[in-house]
Image 1 (tube, rainbow, N blue to C red):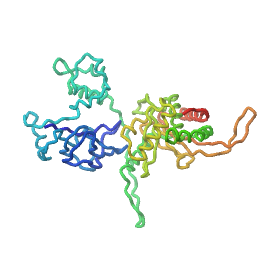
Image 2 (image 1 turned 30 degrees about the horizontal axis):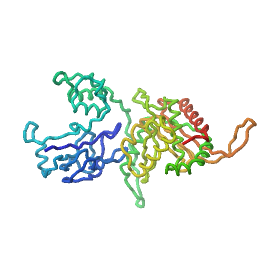
Image 3 (image 1 turned 90 degrees about the vertical axis):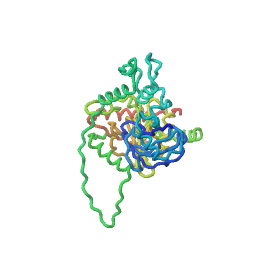
Image 4 (image 1 turned 180 degrees about the horizontal axis):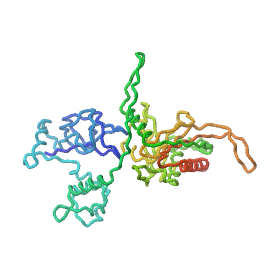
Amino acid sequence: MAKFEIVMPKLGESIIEATITRWVKNIGDQLEEDDPIVEIATDKVDSEIPSPVEGKLVKLLFEEGDIVAVGTIIAIVDMDGDEDSPEDVEEKTETPANDNNSAEIVTPDKVEEVVVAKTNFSESSNFYSPLVKSIAAKENISIDELDSIQGTGKDNRVTKNDVQKYLKNKTSEKKPTAPRVEKVIAPVVPSLQSDKVVEMDRMRKLIADHMVMSKQVSPHVTSFIDVDVTNIVLWRNKVKNSFLDREGEKITFTPIFVQAAAQALREYPQINVSLDGYNIIYRKDINIGMAAALPNGNLIVPVIKKADEKNLLGVVKSVNDLAGRAKANKLNPDDIQGGTFTITNFGSFDSLTGTPIINQPQVAILGVGAIRKQPAVIETPQGDTIGIRHIMILSLAYDHRIVDGALGGMYLKRLKELLENFSLDTNI
C-alpha cells in the first residue's frame, strides 16, 4: 500500500508557519483530488489545503489550534484506500525502511505531477532524476545553478542530498539580518466593573504587533500635497454607466491612483525598495498593495502584481477582483504577497487625510484623502480666476533611513502632475 504525506505548504514570502483552524475532513473520510482537507490561518490570510491525491485520510498529526511550521507533515492519506485503522497506519509507518513489509511513504517530492516547467531541463546535457527535477522546479533553481552543483551520485550525478545541501548553503549565505527591535511592555490598564473587556481576535493581534514593529523599525516622516482631480472626476462621471453596462463592473477612482502611483515609482525607483540592515534591495517589479477593510473591521492588503505593466482596464479588473475576494474572504496567500508599495484610502471614510504606517518591509505608503469641491485659483492665459474644483490631499509616509524629504517631495510632485494632467479623452 502507498501512503502520501500532506505537508504544510509554502504560503508565500516570509511566512514560516500557519495555524490549523479547522479540519474539514476526518480520519476515515474518502478524498478526491483537490478536496479541501484543512483550513489554516497565517498572519496574512486564511486559506485551505487541498488534497493533491485520491485516497483515504488515515492520520491527522496535529489538532485544531496548533501552530505548524512550513514543510511539516500534517496528515497521511492512504492512496490505495484500504481499510487499515489509524493504529495500523501508525505501526506500519514506524516500521524500519529495510523491512520488506513496511508501507511505502509517498512524499510530495516523489509525485511526478508536482514538477512544473519553471526550469528548462532541455538546456542541459546532464541527466537529472525526476526527484531532482521536482526539487529544482519547486525551489526555482535555474538550470545554470543545477549544472554547477557537484554531484555525489553514480557517474557524478546530482542527487537529492546534493540539491538540499546546495539550498541550505544558499539560504545561509542570503539570510537577511533582521532589525533588532526592543520589546515594548505595555502598561496594565485597569477596567471598571461597568466596562466590557473583549480579547482581540487573532488577526487584530497580528495587525497590532505589525504596526508597533513598523513604528519601531522605521523613522516615519509624512509629506502632504493637494491635487486638483477635476478631470478625473468628470471623466469617471462620463464613462461609469457605459463601463458598467459593458463590463458588468463599477469603475472607481482607486485604479487611476494605482496606475499613477506605479508610473511615478518607475520614475523614482529609490522608493520601490526594501532595507536589509544597511543593504538596499531595489525591487524589479512594482507591486502595489491596496489596504482594504474587511467586514469584521480588520485590514488586509491584497497586491496588484506588476501594476506598471497593466493598462487602465487591466488595473480596474485587478482592483475589482481583489477587492471582491477580500470582502468574501476568498483571497489566496499569493494575493497578499510581494507588495513593494501600498496605497490606503482615507477618503472612503470621508477623511481629508491621514498619516499612514508603513507596511514593512516596504519603505513608503500613500494615503489618499476625500475628494471635495473647493474654491480654487485657476491660472489662465487671460489671468487668474476663481472656480469650483475637485481637490484631494495625498499623504506620503516614508522611511527616513532611506527616503529623504527631497525624494519624498519629488515623488509626490510627480504624482500630482500625473493626476492633474489626466486626459478627459482617456479610453478604457
